[in-house]
Length: 479
View (cartoon, one colour):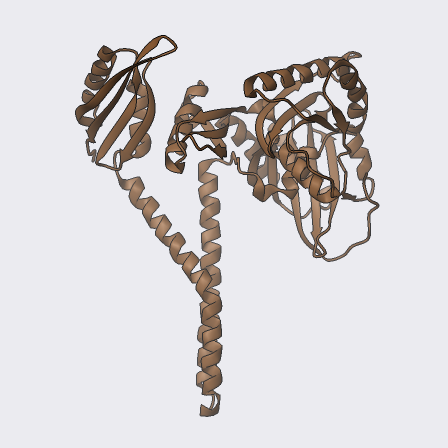
C-alpha cells in the first residue's frame, strides 16, 4: 500500500518518464531526495490527434503542473515494436552485433536505414551460443515521438521498450517494498484498453507480448483474461518452462475486475499488486492510478540506468556521447585552469610558502588525473571512429553485400571480417553445387576477389543432408 506523503524539502534530482499514446499522454514525475526517498506524481490527460497540437498540449501540461525538468525518458508501447528472443551462435560482442543487425533486417520488411534496432544480451551460454532480446521499430515511428517531445520543449534522453520498463518496475517495487522478488513470474500490466505481458526467468526478461481490448465492452475483462491465458501458454510452449505466478498490476479498477476471472478460469497462481506498493505519493496521486497504469513509467523513472534497450536514433545517441565528452573536457580544462591560477598565485608569495605550493599542486593533479585520462580515452575513441568511417568498404557495406547476394538456403555460422583485408565465411548449404555457385557470385561482386574454398564437409541431421563449408576472400579496396 502507498505510504502517506511527508513534507520533504531540498530535492536532489527529478526524473520524468513519458508515454505518448493514441488517445492520451501519461507522465510520471519522480522527485528524489538526499535521504534516499522519492515522491511520485502521476498525470494522465486526453490529447488531440494532430502532432503539433499534441506538442502544444504537452507543453501546457508541463507548465500547468510546474514541471521544470525538460529531460525525459520516453516509453514506447510494445505493440509498436517487433520484439523476440534470438539464439545466436557466438558469445563475442562484435560478432553478436553484426548477427543481430542482419537478423533485424531479415525480420522487418524495410530498408536498414528505415529501422531502429535495440537489443540486450540475456545470457551467454557455455555451448558458445547467446540468448539475445531483440527490439526493432520503424524509424518513422520513433522520430514522430521525438519530434512531438522536442516541439514541446522536451529532450528525450532514452527511448525504452515498455516490456523492459515493466521488468524494471518489478525490480524497483521489490526494493521499495522490501518484499521478496519472485524470480520466474509473469508480469501482467493492465491498462485501460491495453495489456502488456512480460515473462521473467531468473530475473531476466525473456518474452513479451501486448494486445488491445475494448474497455467499454461488458465482456472486456473475460476476453482479456482469455488473451492472457493464451499468451502464457504460448510462452510455456516456446520456452519449455512453467510460470510460477502471475503478478497483476495497473489501473486499479481493471485489476480488481480481471483477477477473480483469471483465478477462476485458469490454473495459474495470481496476485494483484498496487502500482504504488512501497511508494510515497504526492497529493491526489491515487486518482490517476485508479484510471490508468503507470507501472512501466515508474520502472523507467527509477531504473533508467539499468534499462539496456535504447531505441534512440544512432545520430542522437552519438550526439549525446559527444556532449558527455565535451562536458568532461570542459570540466578538465576548468580544473586545469584552477591549477594554473593556484600555481601563479602561490608563485607570487614569499619563499616561506613554497612547500605549501608543492603540496597543493600535488593534490590538485591527483584529483584531475581521472578526468584527464577519461578525456584522452574519449578523444582517442573519436579518432578511431573517424578513421574507420574513412575506410572503404565499411563493414556495413560488406555485410549488406553478403546479405544481398547470398542464395536462399545458405546459412552462416561465422562471418569474420578484417578491415580492408580479408573475409572468412563459414556456414552450410543444401548442396555442393550451391557452394560453387555462391563462390562465382562472390567473384562477380565489386567487393570480393580471389575467393577460395578451404574445405567442405557433408553431414546429415534429422535425415537432411547439409554441406558445411569455409571459404576466404580478399577485399577490394574502393576509393
